[in-house]
Amino acid sequence: MRTLIHFINPRATLSRLGALFAAAALLGACAGIGGAPEAEKTTVYVLRHAEPDFKNPELPLTNQGRARAEKLVAFLAGIPIAHVYATHTDRTRDTVTPLARARGLQVKQFPPIGSELDGKIVGNRTSGAVAIKPLIAALKALQAGSTAVVAGNSGNLYPVLAGIGAPVNSACTAERSDCLPCATRKCFDGKRFNNVWKLTLGRDGQATLSRTTYGD
Image 1 (cartoon, rainbow, N blue to C red):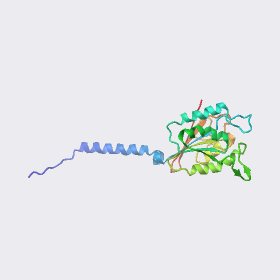
Image 2: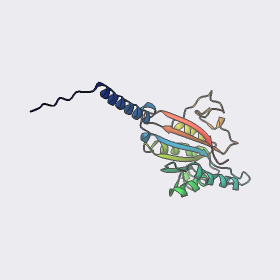
Image 3: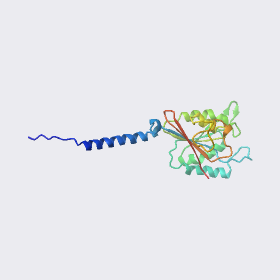
Image 4: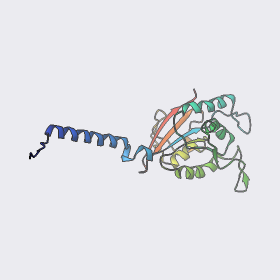
């Protein structure tokens, strides 16, 4: 009766170990910054409403504004979106309505236009400040790994971004896209309607901000 003895090939063993280490490194890279898997990161796209008609007291979108709203659909094509939010005005809601319709979603407003707040009816001329706290609360309650799109106003866009973790740096310049120069309306560029901020939030609390443009 023969006894079979298997000899271990050192080179083969080292090769297998190398492959295992490479796979482990790849998994670590896929985990993202801070070791948080991409699936656990929450992403929020924040934009200002498109161009409004400043001659109309209700500030509805102009033809240019409605055209920009339609272009948002193509800009975010291929990105899985779970929620579409807007502040309390018609112009913010109408900016993201084409996107919501294309995804089979409803636009949820914070607070809803026509609702009562402090004894007054919320309308298009209501201060943008009323949307800050409820919108921040809704965004902070998002399920990890989900993606939301938010349309805001010049008076609440920076406060909302800062409120959910966007980095704020007083030394931040207009050329930079990874931070906000302030957390208020004071430093907001009110002349532009094409900016989109992408804020990525990990479970470890780390936030990454980037900015681009759309619709031009």
